[in-house]
View 1 (cartoon, one colour):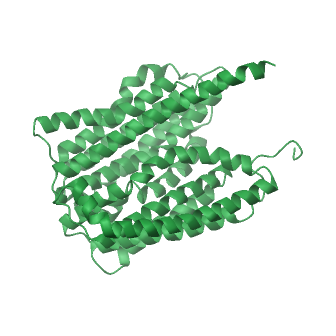
View 2 (cartoon, rainbow, N blue to C red; view 1 turned 90 degrees about the vertical axis):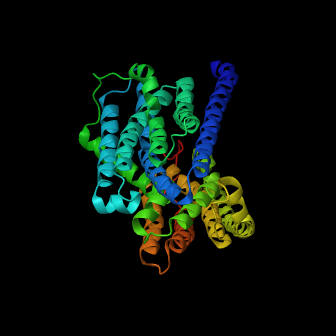
View 3 (spheres, rainbow, N blue to C red; view 1 turned 135 degrees about the vertical axis):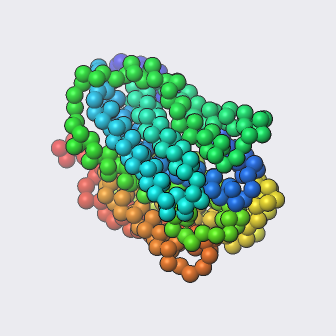
Amino acid sequence: MSTEVDTPATARSGRTTAGSLGGSLIVSIGLGYLLTVACQRLLPPQEYAIFVTFWGLVMGLGSTLSPLEQELSRQSAVAALAGGKAGRPALRAVAVGVVVAAAFSLALLIPPVNEKLFHGDWSLALIVLCGGVAFACQFGTRGLLIGQHKVKAFSLLVVAEPAVRAVILGVLVVSVAYNVVSLAIAVAAGSFAWLLFTRPARQLLDFRVEGDGWGVTSRRMGMLLAGAALTAAVITGYPALVGLLAPGGDGDRVGSLFAALVIARLPLTLIGPVQSLAVPFVVRLSVTPEGRHRLRRVLALGAAASLVLAALGALVGLWLGPWAVRFVSGPKYDIDGWSVAGLVWSSVLLVPMQLLTAVLVARTQAKLVLATWAVVTGTASLVLLFLPGDTVFRAVVALAVAPTLGLAVVLAFVLRRAPEPVEAGPEAA
């Protein structure tokens, strides 16, 4: 009887939580997108190519470290159910993330790598180091907060990150003190927003609580971070991948390409919440044979529809793309229609790809998720390295071919009959 009484209150609480999180996410995405467009307006294309490479490295590193939020939210939620707090394993997980961020960032100081990415500007590599280490702490803080259902503090932190960047950017614009390095500092500064929430996060930790040791924590986080890194390499970190593997040269054309990439990737900023909804949907359908059959049918039809939508989007990009880039980024950014068409095709196909990998997550098939993104990243890397042509041609072809192949691979994984239901019913027990 108590369950029936509590159900409306629980539903209202769920709607309030979803509204708060959804609102903060929309504000965060909007501020981040405005920041990238503002930097396009402030910098000439050649300098913007360097800046967006830095942006891709920092945000790609952030995407790589994002599993820290999931892991610490899990630990914090489990501890809350037992009436306790997260303990030392949470700190160990963050420490693994800090080491990964530091090792990656220090590699950017290797002279050939630094010259390829930043044209020898060592300060940008050091800013990536600071921003990456801060990201590890930030995702750890977010995980602790949401794991204990501190929705208000979590939502404020989600908004605080891009807000800090926007405030510093505004100061730079007003003082006319902006350049690649100062804008990079503004980007990295947002990663330190977690410092404003150290007190509530500290209250959710108990250093006396033991748990998984360094070995177990390192192996688990290693797999999670590896999968996130492969994903980030072809989404947020793609400009850095191009800068590292492609031949380089013609900075204005490359800068215009990256400006178009930012615009074409707008739909991907909204996919995170949809992925979160997809997992429980898959879990519910996968319990029965009829549900699994229906799920496979929905996925096959959705993949076919995405190919049609990608083709239509590519045609629109071919026709209106150059005008749209100049309208958003400024007249200095000039790009061919075929390049925009390829970027739109890629961006549309990455949406069903991410949703299909969410199906694999729901089935606890983490190795298949890793395999899928390894195919995508490996294909893009090989095209960037060995395809004849200039940097822009290689970058567009790589970004069009890799998700197409990846979609075929992940579709094959999810359409084959699952060996066991996601959740066994009482009969199975």
